[in-house]
Image (cartoon, rainbow, N blue to C red; front, side, top):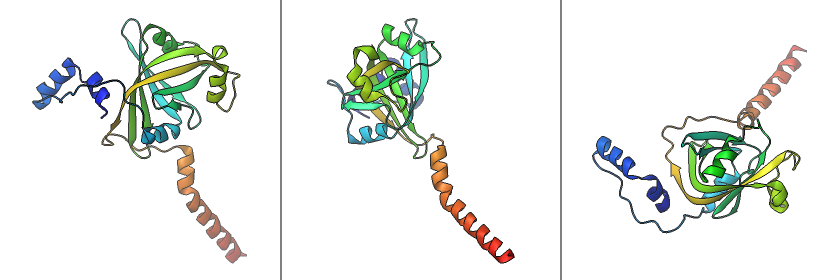
Length: 199
């Protein structure tokens, strides 16, 4: 766990809960500044086609939204900055509104196949695509800029990798197709041999 992540998340109430249930609390060291993303984190982010974005409303209610796109749609601009294009959805704009009131966000990036999870804390801001065309082009998904309305830029505070213990493996259609590809080929081969024998 990166030092700043521990410093931010292990609040007094969390430490009291740890003492109550486990008899001791996590040791907290002083954290100075932010924890930049490393190469392992950048590779993991580039390989994701979705993530969960947590924000908080001005009334204190948390909200979690799923964001999806082609692999790498969440871009690492530099070790301390992430960004993605925000496309038109159901027009509720809950996350967008929350970010105007409270810029704190939490991201969960899941790799179900390999049972890995990366959690990122940061401060996010929303920009209109018309105000930053160069970045909008860089972040554009396969549909181009036609439906992109906003850019979400996240200044990373810290991150943490979770253990795989309770992550249930799941597979994308592409991963399943890749796994069963050799079986399908072998079945086609055997069917062809059977037809040949029957003829």
